[in-house]
Amino acid sequence: MAGSLTRDEPAEGTVVPRPVPAVIRTVWYAAGVLARRILLLAGLLAAVFAAVELLPGDAADATSERGESAADLARRRHLLGLDRPVAERFWDWMTGLPTGDLGTSARGEPVADLLAHPFPNTLLLGGLALLLTLVASVALGCWAAAKPGSPLDRAVSASATGILALPEFVVAVALVLVFALWADWLPAVTLTDADGSPASWRMLVLPVLALAVPQIGWNTRIVRAALADEATAAHIETAVLDGLPRRRILTHHLLPGALPTIAAGIATSTGMLLGGAVVVETIFNYPGIGSVLAGAVADRDSPVIAGVVAVTGAVITGVLLLADLVRAWASGGRT
Amino acid sequence: MTATTADAKTAPASRRTRRRTALRVLPAVLLTALALAGPWLAPHAIDAPVTAPYAEPGGDAPLGGDQLGRDVLSRLLAGGRELVVTSLLVAVLVTAVAAVLGAVSALRPAIGRIVERTADVLMLLPAVLGILLVTLSWPDGGRLAVVTASVVLGVPYAVRLVAGAAAPVAASGYVEAAAVGGERLGYLVVREVLPNLRATLLALFGLRFVAAVYLVATAGFLQVGPQPPAADWALMIRENSAGIVLNPWAVLAPSIAIGLLAMSVNLAAAALVPATGRKAVPAL
Image (cartoon, rainbow over all chains, first blue to last red; front, top):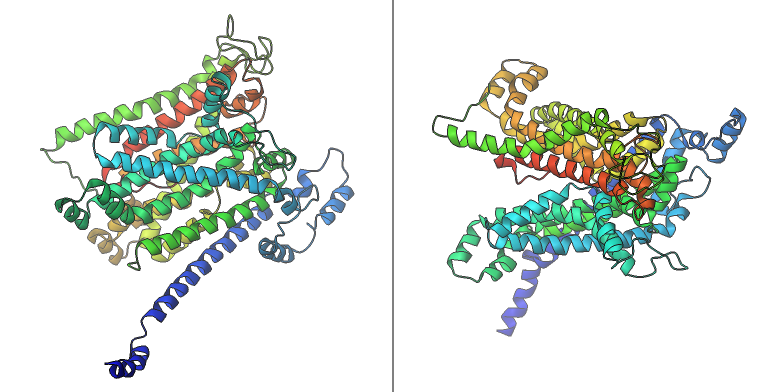
């Protein structure tokens, strides 16, 4: 027996080398997805450069003071590097993101320095809101899907549709009025520590809620629809006929099948959350990129917003990459 | 070349669903009409103080005064028109551009692929940041900058939706016959494909109106839309939030107005989505 085994081993290894190609195929797939996502990010950077370049007005114009001479303007344009050839500036901009160089604001500060402290705060706010969105929308979607067509299902779907189109600042105003001014449970304004981060977790509650509420509406509908789609599949019918418990069907049969759609929906929400964060931070005086951008709006400072778009684009790229991999894993190589 | 599906038997049922759809569209139509007519109904001038700053409701000003003592009710009535007009304009433009591009994409797959890639790239750009990028890079753009940004950001997703709906139509026998018969692309798009997508385009218009209200209102709130002393719901919320304790109505009234507009328009849009396409929830 032992002899035959040893004799077979090399043959097995050379003729059907199954485990190795599977790994290679996975790596190859992941590399392909990564390359595609990086190309799309490069496309975004190019589009941002083109928008700033082609639209009338530049950073030197925007910050010009009344009565400033043409020579002053030209000198500032030179200081900001706006008089260099387009191709050179384009190359600097495209290669800047990986090296952490996001250009120079109209006031002459590096944009990366301006964002260094606020951006992690915004990521914290957006990350918490994304987590809450994921948990709440999957829970609500499953709850509604448990009894299709019931009053509960209709109530959940109707409220989800009602709140998904609300601008974040409207939700924020309602939350501030109810929880901060009338009930006095939570603070309406974010106070910061010496290091510039929110002083206590209670200050995060209302901003996170204001951001997450519309996205919960949005994703609850997606989860509900994905579960309804999946429920028509033949293997679900078999599971029901086999008399498996409802809960087991939901967790072991329905949810895995609906996972790719849910992942795509949550990934789409990332952009909405990061955009909405700018608005919500303004209301709660939260120390994130919202306050930086409020200053940029007052100064019409286009390099700052371009830098913010570049960093946000990179973060969204990361989340989409994760969603790609979840989808590939959930479909088990079927696609 | 329009397929009629309703036969005698389903006519009463379809009439009932049509009535139900009309009922769900009605609130949006009424609110839009009120916002458009509002400036004529305002009892006071929108830019002259009639009370003390942040005065409580009472007497001449049923909703009190704002930061400068201007009548909140008058500014509320006047402050919806620009939002509604701009949003309608954006929705019409996006739907029109997407209808043509979507039909072309269905007929010419190479163009469809370009549109797909553009939509993939724009997915990395949150709409709020996109509108800030355009308005800050174009300081003198004003309302045109807001409209341009909203249209550019909305078109790729809308094209995707139209192209999806147009694909079966483009593959149908009569369109292929017309194409083989030597009809030009423009003729195929306008005369053969688009007439069969009326329901999709109507639903798309509703969804784009929802998205436009969100974007235009948010632009107003971020102070890149209407500039003071203009009366604008979103700007009112931003300007008066400092006095929310003194006169909550100066903030609450415009918030309720935007909230009701967004919800009623969304209700209408959801009612217009064809039953078969309801699962395809397009991104804002």
